[in-house]
Length: 76
Image 1: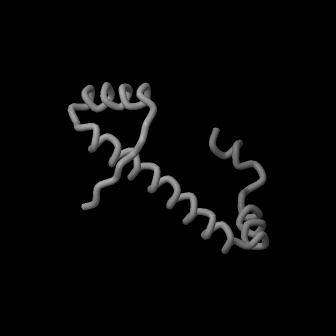
Image 2: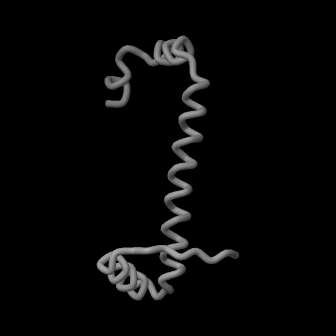
């Protein structure tokens, strides 16, 4: 594990302290969790963009064409 010094505005630091206390965790755990969540979000978007880039309009149109015309009527 490595150490990192982060400069935060006092107001942000105080809010982090309050939220960490509310969850019964340390400020360090709170920040580590927040960073992990942000990383997961970015990595998910990257993955979805890569997968979307593999898509072909022809395939989409073909699958959309398989939907019955009156699909709402069938659910009633």
